[in-house]
Figure 1 (cartoon, one colour):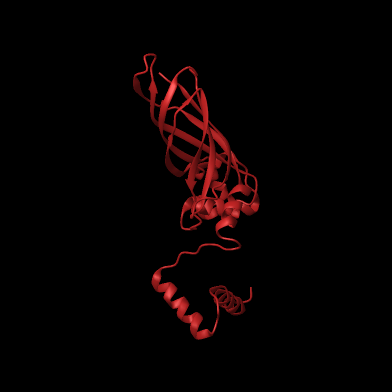
Figure 2 (cartoon, helix red, strand yellow):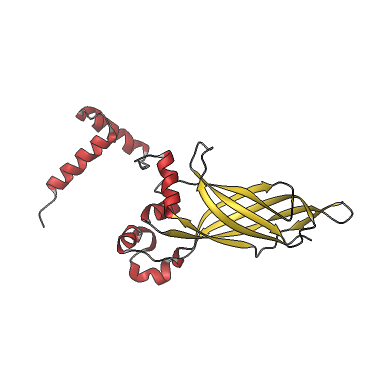
Length: 217
């Protein structure tokens, strides 16, 4: 029966997709290289190991909404499930590499997007948990089926710069803000009646007005 091991060898922005995604270079090796693997139906859960890195004071401030006050982080920093994805790996013998595409959201109502947005630099520690099914040929050439062991995993430290490159590719110098439809309609009505050409100008004007009206401390 095949005994597969997995390694994440690198990551880069997926440039052939309409929506943001990272492409991870997945290495797969069979402990019995003489076996012929027909295909692998692979399922992968990706977790962000948020407690396995240090955070600057600025990052702690950014992440307060997710993890509460830093004084409580020994209790609140828990692994975050980022994505669950599947891929079909074609036939190989011995070892192979295959791309693993992971969709990425810049919607700041999503916890993982808030996390990436709150990190300024460095690396994000990830754990990839694998499961699935292997189809392989036995010594007589007959097709056999075996499950992937539940304890198969790989770790990888994703450079924050790679995430930023992906978002700059799809949202250059921009961010995604989700509003309720009625709030958007009110904002758009204010923009038009005030004569602003863009929403950027509208919000900047509102912020400037709020700053002027803020009571002096």
